[in-house]
Image (cartoon, rainbow, N blue to C red; front, side, top):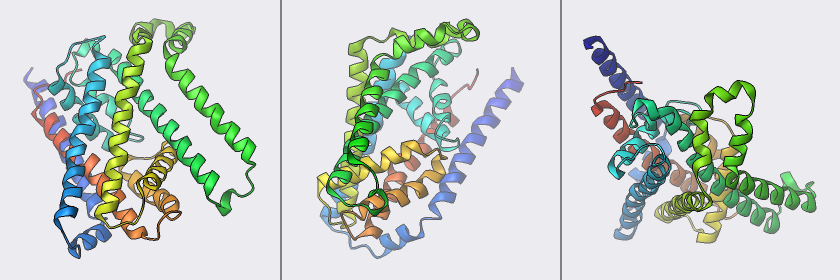
Length: 319
């Protein structure tokens, strides 16, 4: 028993140190952002933009906490505070793994050991809902860009084929989400997967209205995210309209969704993509890149630090 406690303590300390180190390492690369801050002329308005963005971060993850609480209620009742802690721990774990796959593990630590595998599949449903919203908005963003902007790299694209492809992707995405239960039931008939069906059939327990609620919460999160980006554009004096900002953000994160990466590496990838789309609407590329970097710090780095403390204070990491 004492050995187990020692192992838990070492593991928690290791996660804490690793997350703090990775964040410190990444922040040290943002020299342009720190130079921007050093020369920044703060006003009451700019301070309010930044403060509002920070406040929205807490609401962003609060909506995610409600979403996760709703999903795992089929397995185990958790209060909103426990759900929030789970979300923050998931962010910490996501920071250290490719494509944020560790997010599942970070969250299910706050469920009873016997419910954790089912909990990972419940979490999966929430992730799919967020992906659906990302795809829908991304397709809208790309539609606007292809419709109203001449991009040399895509001049050879046939518009009919392109719009047809977007429509098919949109229809298939919505169909897959609202029929996730039927898809899971079909998968459960595969012979070597049958013995695990008691774990993943949780995905079949959500009715249409529950899936709608999860999708609505995902939409709220996405809306907050878009508003945060626009506020930081204003903070860095980027001359861009809200609708244009939405198109840039929606297109960027749709492309980001298609590119596998580590959470720590995605800031660089995202920077390149957002500069590509941002250049269509504004010449203030330094401000656009700074906004993207600062939002990464606000939405991921800060919650990750809090999440690492949450894991450190957790009494047990038993499996």
